[in-house]
Image 1 (cartoon, rainbow, N blue to C red):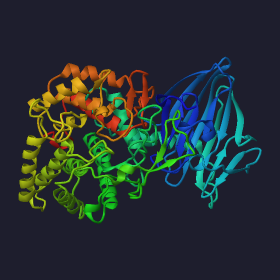
Image 2 (tube, rainbow, N blue to C red):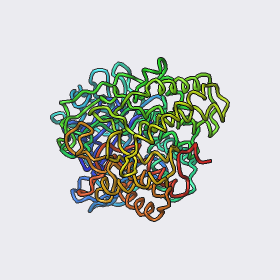
Image 3 (cartoon, rainbow, N blue to C red):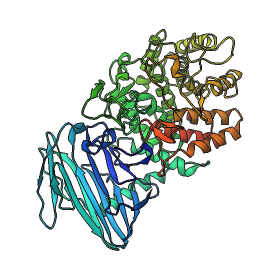
Image 4 (tube, one colour):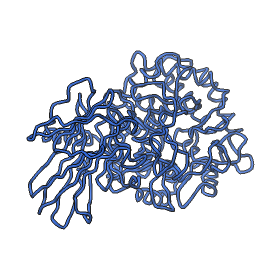
Length: 597
């Protein structure tokens, strides 16, 4: 059985990531990218679906863990009856190879470690051909499965029924390195890794990146860790930013709300881009804009809401039978059916983020503004089309108020680009359409009796996405309609002190079951409280939210308050970027980066 979701720490090489439990189990690792098939899949089943365990032989051993400051080098300190030892784990940031390093370091006494390797390629659908290829002095295990292979160096494993076991003993000052290296099976294995050099380079890279973080407000430690998470989820080659490191971790334990988040949503990426820009990282904006140009190149009318890490378009959703799901919450899905949805807010998010980059000093290239102009044309063309909304409902499309506001924002940013930056475009027409859309939203997106914004036209329900309206400048945070909207949210969407996305019992999403509070929504509420003068409410909610981070500062998608546990995919970019925005709001930085004038 896998560990609780909050018990996992992330290792990352900015291409893929491994999840390591408090018990010393790597239960999730997809190679060589986040969206590749898993090698270790116990997270969505049990040890028979792939796991690499490393922990003291002493069953009563206890542990504490931390990241080396401003890095993703994980240090787990084990205390046993016989002594103390540490495991230092990381994924080297390398240009041409993919490795996982697990270094055992003796501190005091004598500590024996057991390690168990269960290699199950392709989402546990393929058992590899495994052979010993090293020497007694440098033992190595070579495993091949179709197009992929790994080599594990550092210990002479003994095989028993597809399980490979070994024992490592360390004394004070001893170091013992176990290194797993991935490669394509038709190629020669990569040469042995220089672990000392890899540790130094990896530490230097992460800390060098973190040294560029600009933050002058409260909760600096949490903000820095969250920015590091966003960087860890960003592919260093392509610039694509995945929404989370995992697939199919359940929003409802035992339920079917299980989705694959290892792709690049334009919305989530645009929001990530804004917080990176507002904290001093303009180079990442340039890298992502180039990714965007490649991904949506061609006919603007064919733009998708999400893409693969390198801009792939074919993300068809399918179900796996080889993995039973996290604590049997099935089905396990790879790909995501939302790729075929129309979500009217997405282009607005992209245009808002690109304006932030423009105002931060990123100059428009030969294709970047023509692309944005074409996207604005797409908004105009689709103006009369209902959509599936930010929450990707699988019920009937609706006229979602949040989506309509983000279409307004796209047009507004187009007008501002022409009027304020002198870029070419039909600002007069865009302004006319924008203003007409505002009149429509003000009339149809507000409940005539309650005086609050509504989830969609014709509804009396509220939706947490309405908290975005003041962020993009549609109205002020203390607009009477927003204040009434918040009051209605507090009445109908607060569960155990945190905010739900919407009421699932209305059937709007076309899915069975329920879900837990979505953490990004509560961080948005912190921002709203701060913007409308409810400072103490903002601080109190922020404190309760930060208490939900795990021992190494990570957040998943949702939180099960009753059980006191994380739920949904993890670590989740949207949770971390909204944490950063909430901290910024508490420091007085209200609204999107481009509107802080």
